[in-house]
Image (cartoon, rainbow, N blue to C red; front, side, top):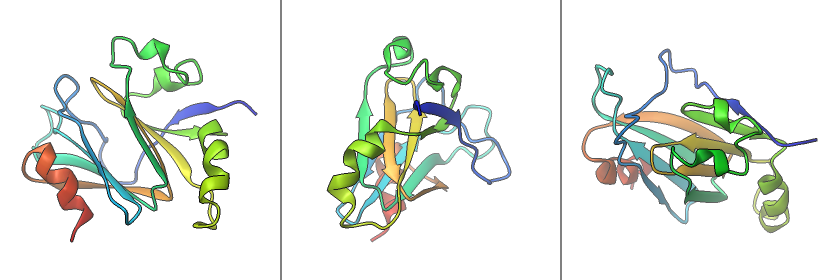
Length: 149
């Protein structure tokens, strides 16, 4: 089966979105298999704390080009990424298949392949799950804060 990207909605009771023009995206990972991406809140959001996506049991994280103007060059663009505005999930991920032999001794689950579009980058994370938090401060403060001590 071919890879396909679908929008992924979290059950948070409100649309998940962030500042589309200057999100100041900041990604951190640790050796406890956690990753967090913080971005500034959308200007229309009454809660102006950072929007933080935190993944648990994250086996791979990537923050890479293209930016929004060159997104049509991304390998998953025609597979549905072009229709994702915020957070997506990649079905039948070739990245999951490629990394499975390297992480299969650590995990008994098949990670999901999450994909996040931002102004200046695309973030991809292979992880068990994702949660959303709202944390005050800059994105450089909020992302590590979501990982806890």
